[in-house]
Image (cartoon, rainbow, N blue to C red; front, side):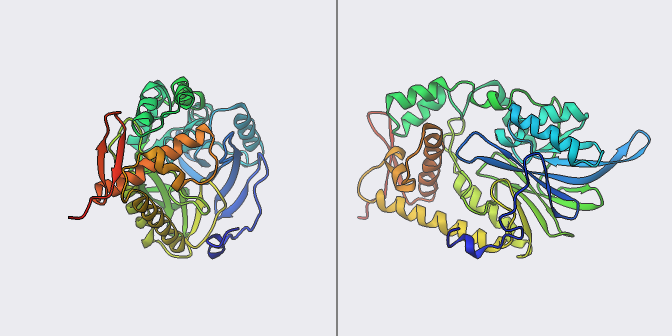
Length: 358
């Protein structure tokens, strides 16, 4: 545990749900955890006790929040959950915080299996539909060209990015045909409790977190993680975006929630210390932006040159593509803020430098 983590509190300590099992973390809220084949090797999913109108009256059951990627291991774990953890009740709806594969990959299967509707923001539903049908932002020629325009010129790396044409569909092979739209400020009754939708930007097109004031629980998705900073990237589909500024403004929405809110993140362990964590994330990005400013003070720098300043450890290609997107996001925050100038060289590569004082 690092020094920043010590300022947070983990009510369950080091206890984790067993594979195919759950832990109750709040009244009517169960935590399950599934493996991922990445460096970030798990995702937290949530079961919320629910009831909805049915053909013959009120039906008792569960709402699922997020799904994991579509892989045999995840389906097998879900089967164990169906058998052990639902108390013989059905899944009534599938809530998806955002369109990234580890959150939406098995939504189609869960919705078909239980004849349950999917709830998601309209923006992320349509972004997921696009990603299922193309490789934009995750691999293929457009992604390779985008990274090359920011200085990633290693032929082997670019060839691997070009070849990664089925990255998103391999984990999200299909989507439900219909969805129920979630929007910022919307109030949803789940079981006997009221949950409020809180939109977030910068990490995903329109991420939705859920807050229950009665139990002081926040299902934060990827917008508020206890140990790592959420990936905030620029992608080839929106090459001149400013996601970092959007992200920092979005997490400030959580400032109005009580400090003792129990935060249920998508990665890491449930924690309290929300306001402390918000400040930590602001401090983290403030320091990274200062490092980028210093590095670009006198010499124009591409994102590929800046990347080792922000990421000092060795990265594989999967991690490098995320790191490139996040490096561009930091450069763009400074560029849009007027603190850096963007130049384009004869080689077609974007470089950034601090404006020279007269």
